[in-house]
Image 1: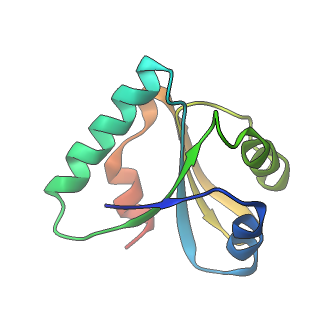
Image 2: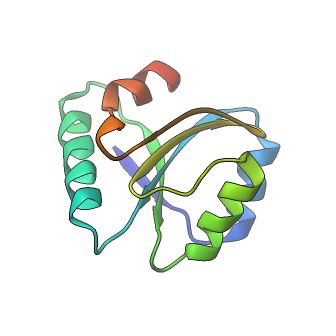
Length: 109
């Protein structure tokens, strides 16, 4: 898996302007549940034959970006959280124990 750091608001505009399906993983570096979800996600990614680009948002460092995501895509902030987006539509949203690598594979074919 290729983590793409999501660290500026311009990237959100690029996601909005694109009609490509993309994924954002929102992660709190101080939360044990978030850390476990990230490790599980990476473990399954390492078993995959295909590499996926996934935006990685460090919530503690870039909370403003998370707030903008909630506003633009009309979703409630969670941590950890996996979002699958296409343009201005959130087509999949999972948090905590609901985060599953298979969902990423389903949408990012």
